[in-house]
Length: 332
Length: 276
Ligand SMILES: Nc1ncnc2c1ncn2[C@@H]1O[C@H](COP(=O)(O)OP(=O)(O)O)[C@@H](O)[C@H]1O
Ligand SMILES: [Mg+2]
Image (cartoon, rainbow over all chains, first blue to last red; front, side, top):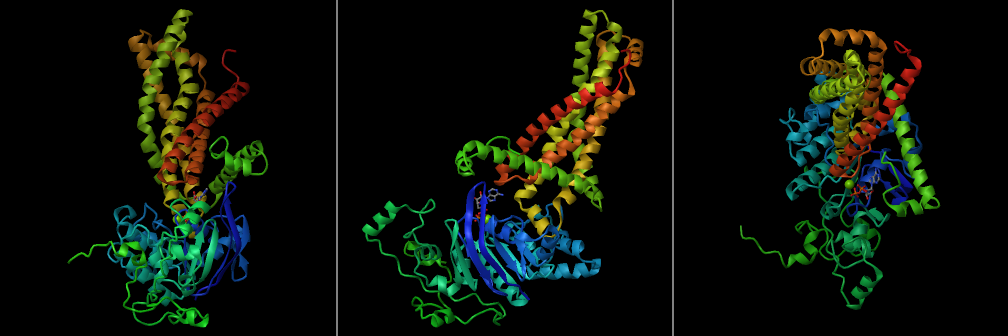
């Protein structure tokens, strides 16, 4: 039914270098949250800290009344049963077939008979569209299939919290669209709490209920999707809209000189692009955690950029960047 | 267990006081981690249920990568020892002891050394590469999230398999090395089979073989534990796995030669030698 995860003042460093510091956020029960950040900002480290694979230097991770970094080994294993994790490349066991991979958690943790296992495994494999690939080895299938198989394995014990590490990396746009749809549908069916870690702006703009932005070793902002997509905060605005103007440069952040030069040259910030409508579940019914489009803006007196929430608008956030004009129109 | 200061001196300096303290704590931390890993691995050996399937697969795998190189290395090794000792015994007028000397040299020293080379170079590197690849594919993380302890599931059976195969390998190296030495001595240096065997009776004893097998057992355990540790702590993508394998082989070599020396020294203290 979903469980709330409350992170307070979390800090993690490797060999004296902080990866990120003082991260506080709450993943609301049953909602989809996206944690967005450039590559190397420690998104994967954050996920691994959330499930106790890495120990934070400071801070708490509250899951109901248990503080995960301070649990004993035994309690930790128990709390981890609440989690399903889709690792970046699926993390399938290379020596097992897809079927055995998906059956693995059932065989390890339940006393189900082989025929019960078979029916659960085929159900999950069907859910991710891998029926017929049971006998394949992970080395023989494409990256997208590995991710979906990893997702099936993560779902097999009916987790309350599902973590996705870059579900969209290394996939073509069509597969990404399918996978995003699958994620939304899964949330509708399971009402589990979802956290998606990604650097794909399009996913961040259309899939979640909440967005967080990890940047420059801290959490720049975390909140409802509409709050971030209508935010004028320079870093948030630049990243979520894939703009070149702003504090983020090619290598990490721009220095003061560059920013001054930018200001002096009178570089205009491009207007905020419209907020795209949220990706609905494919059966047309709303998700339990879903809020009406524009609700947050109305409640907080924010006027969304013109054209927001129109269903026929292009769904990619990248179109608003400079390349709209340069893209040749391909006659088909 | 990358020996030495942290890669970035900047880190060491920022890290609690001066660079020296930084290096020292970093170093201590690494050895501390490795030591903790050894303890976990030992504990894993006695945890039930023992992973029989993984053990058999690994034993098969390790023997498949090590038997052929071991046999091929021990033939010339046996021959070289026969050649050296043959000429040395001639110089000091003790040809009749050629057989004894070369068999003892092979069983006591050459056997364990060749075993160490093969165990570290072939078995250790294979274990490290395998676990390293699983580490960077996040298979080990996935395993832990699914509530399985990779040390119990993967490391313990590898350590036992490596110990078993090292012992068998040592036996193989002895047989092949002695046969090689015998052939070389009898056929090319004009020694007589009778003298070869008789002299061996005079000086050789069973504890020689036992000591060699004990060494091999230790070598197998050390190689597997170091390789597993380096593999499971590999980071930074495929290059990280390559580095881990490289370091694992180098570290294992150093450890095995040191252990070899210690065991040999103890052996001469504990076991009375024939004719002395
Ligand atoms: N086990 C580790 N030991 C040391 N440094 C690490 C470790 N894991 C990750 N890092 C470092 O932490 C940073 C963040 O890594 P990561 O979480 O993989 O980034 P992202 O997933 O956002 O691309 C990187 O600079 C990486 O080198
Ligand atoms: Mg990552």
